[in-house]
Image 1: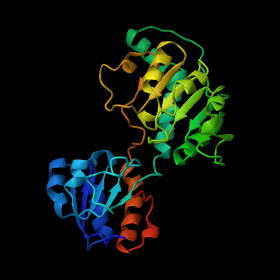
Image 2 (image 1 turned 90 degrees about the vertical axis):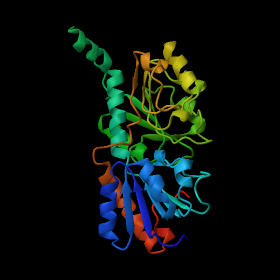
Image 3 (image 1 turned 135 degrees about the vertical axis):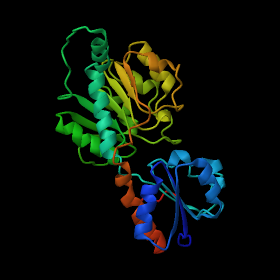
Image 4 (image 1 turned 180 degrees about the vertical axis):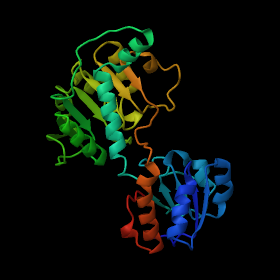
Length: 316
């Protein structure tokens, strides 16, 4: 276990909010706060602790902190941190996984409703001044298959069931989970999605999940089904998805994450009428700092107490 923190840098758009809370709870800490990368780079040299959103923590930033012994990510993703050549060997890494269920579940439902009811078509009619009506599909009675049975999956599953949907989860191994009518394994995915109305991807991207949703899985989906990806872009074979959409083998897609981000302005996914693109906002909320703060404070308490077992979401 690393020695107790002494000098903490918070690098985030709401850095001062976190810093004030840390100073109030732990008055002996030296806490610096900035939203500026330049200032963060200038301050990191003598800091032993960094509090930062995972996407900002690239190798160059981490290399500017040779004394870093603990990094807490203000995000669930830590792929820029784990194994980074810029981070000192033995540094502790913790994440803010576990708070994103409400906002990601709500975005999933928003995309599911917008796709099935053809919200873009309604907005186009509003702009054109036309008055076109068509039968409105319900979520009630539909089948949602959720690829990922973690805290976000459970949050979404319970909301789907509340709307009268049947919910199947797909996990790496058999398990029981709240809100699911059934849980299948990844080996059974093609069969599990064969009668799905929605396939919602909630998995992180790693060597085991890379292109897990490939051409074979997309072919197994009914042509009336929609794909929603809120996990990571690399979990879905984007080229295979584009082909399925262009060829009418899939009803549509709601995509919040992509293999290349930001999604290029001329990317063909942007121009398809049956695709809704959102800018990787699934984990965001208007109370995000308040959601994450208790995790940060609990982990700081554990670090100061020299209690590695008390750390929440330790990933390295």
